Image 1: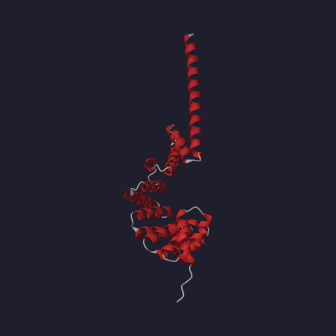
Image 2 (image 1 turned 90 degrees about the horizontal axis):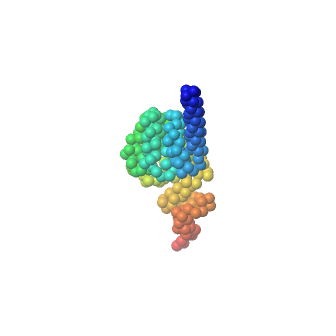
Length: 252
């Protein structure tokens, strides 16, 4: 009789364990879904962290780490983002995208030499991808190595010539390097590709102003301010150039 009672108890314990396991699995799946579908970086950070504590499968762990790392970047928690991207790199050392993500995080921490080492690695892993040259170009810009930065941006643009964002960033570096006329050429090219490119319009206006051409600057900055009326930098620039732009030449 005792063995029957023990057998019943054993079956009951097994059923209870199964129910608990099923409940835990459902909860874990719910946490994963919350992580994947969260709209805000704070929610992504919270739910991805909870989901990762549930020790999901390797492929899902990668997805959660990447999502949490990107959320940490958005929140400005760069040192923790480096840790998540480093875990991904250890698991997948030949994926250039993970190395590139860590490059951006290290740049954000001001660790430019470490970022350059990662950027070089990403270029080695994916020499035919524009994004790796773009990222390394930005690191070279941080290091004030403008010739190297422009070389990388030239390569990025040759690989992806229809990306006006790359052209705008190259123009900024050219302006930093004192090549302002070339910067305006790049900005005009970006605006021709994308007439609604407001950053390019603003930058071209400010560059015209730096070159002492208030009339050209006013045209760009007024067009920009109609779309972005609350930009204090542009408002100040317009206030200073209006008198010069509208002033009639003096007569002898």
